[in-house]
Image (cartoon, rainbow, N blue to C red):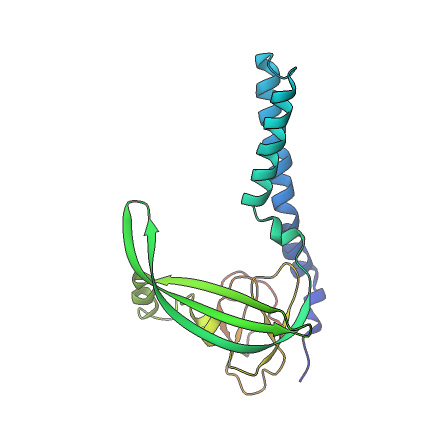
Length: 193
């Protein structure tokens, strides 16, 4: 088998571009708004104001996912999968949750960790029927030794050999789909198969 050439589909290209450019747009936009507010107050003429704006811009860039901007495509092998019990805080509630971790080692020997946290409530919803897709399905889809490709701008890896699978994972929204489908039943992106 080989990796899908559907990664070059125009809808997937737009999705990847949005995920990579959005952090920059949020940073520039919020910094511009803050600059306008501070400028209107008449306090923008001091060096301290400029330093604070620069710090704010840097923090916004990091908070909005600067990692996405520097994301690169690479091939690797699934080397490990782990499950840990964690506490997930949602609002004022603390929920028990499972942290599913996938470890992929690339050709340079670097280990990439992908983690998905699934609360107990998420697991209960997944048992209700086909409408819900468990977040952990994205990790359970892979087996140790699978050759995978991370496409820059996508959330999850594409498996090289899908010939024995009945389902295929949407690398954009992490929904498992029947292998016969051409596009994801959740987000509508073309499936990489």
